[in-house]
Image (tube, rainbow, N blue to C red; front, side, top):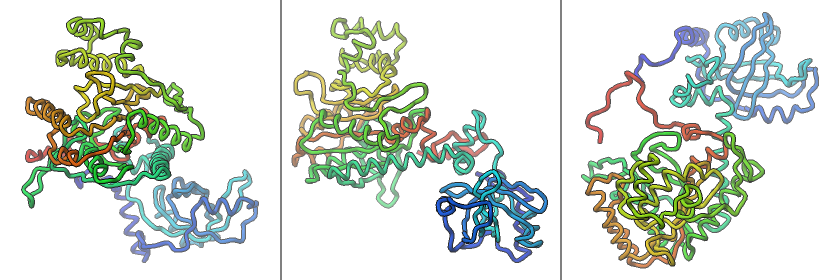
Length: 502
């Protein structure tokens, strides 16, 4: 943001000068003895129409200022709630009352001292004895901050969005509660939380294009992680049997209602388990968190009611394509399947070289959006599952699942591949794709292969998208509504891209 883009108002800056001219610091250091507004409300539940005897000290932001001559009503809000202020010239005195009239405005942060009482209409109010400026706002709050015309401004200036939209604050309180409930669920079951590198010399754990940077001291190209998977599995090799990480991941991909280049997920690994155990763990996590947030497992999402009561529905990928798209892939030739995909407007069909690859194309193009209620799709082709163990009874398939809700992927899990030779071969095939121009193919991580060479026990793993889970449990249609500061396109005239950027 350039200096010319600042929203400072000249009249408010003049009031800062006036306050200082009167010997009043508009940005003092502390307001001692403060109580929350919620605490004041609780302790004043029995207040009557007469001014109380207990003196309260609260602080917060002025949201309204209604001047009635010798009295002023205002609304003060802190994080815990809102309370009305009753300010009289007779109580403050001529000088302070005039100062409030001329220098205090909507949006300012103030400290207040006063007594509780109820107005004639029963509203709990503080009868103000003293008021102090704590932070003079130089920018005015918008009177109205809703509607499609303001969506970009809401995301770009989330701080204003949070100030004026209580429902937005509630969304992010919900997000915090979801993460806390997740940690409790896993901690209660003996899982340990770890932190693995964000800057990595070799990226892996997912098929995605990475962000690239350069460490000048090491003279080394590094990548922002696309997933913590390969490092968490190293911990399982090292002897930790129940591990997880709530991680920030970075993928150089498109931005839409379900994708942001920086996002949060939890990845969980447990030794001596397989993908059926991970499905049970996944639905246990999600149903428990839903119960914690809503007090029930049936929640509204848009015009749909989502039922997170376990067990969730389970379907094989080819079974889902047969049932929901009406296509039995095994009864068609490859040419016929390609023709079906072409006729139904599905892209990427030309890249499918066999029935299993066509299965993925048809599933993604015709089935995913139909999976509204929580549904596990399992048994994925080996071609697009480079980290999953081969299926114990289905040739050409892996023990992998994805959980879909409201037409979007919410979780992804495997019986983890622990055969180092098989893993090396799969990485080599990914490396060939990468060198051929596939920007999302995985790199060959020799150190991870070496780790597997020391022996990793049979292991189940699952990753759950935190942002998408928050979307579902807070009834938000876009990922930008649940990420505090989502990535946005530069505003027109905001400056040119640095041509030296990678």
